[in-house]
Length: 151
Image (cartoon, rainbow, N blue to C red; front, side, top):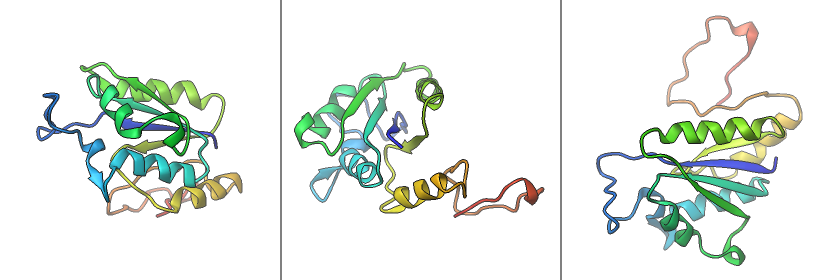
């Protein structure tokens, strides 16, 4: 698995695009921006490059938070989404990449320490075809012989 698409487009009313207030992705955890933790987690899981899809006005801020190429744990490309439909850009990036290789779609504000490598091994072993983030409660599938959900 070489590519991760990182969705850094999510905003709430608490995320102020005023150029002064930091985005959720650049907030420090242990003096390191959250987005840097996410990229490090992906690198630890075996990803060799990442494409961060940022909200239209946050690409430069995310790039600055990630630092220069030498300080990053893997190569990162930042692309900005349109303001009106940022998730379309995330889906377009995912669709373009899926034709050639397995791809991880990672929320830019979520950490899954140590789980990515284990899920990729299960994928390579044929145990799973697709891994989706699930909510806290996983409901029973109506027709369980077509697949199963893993937590």
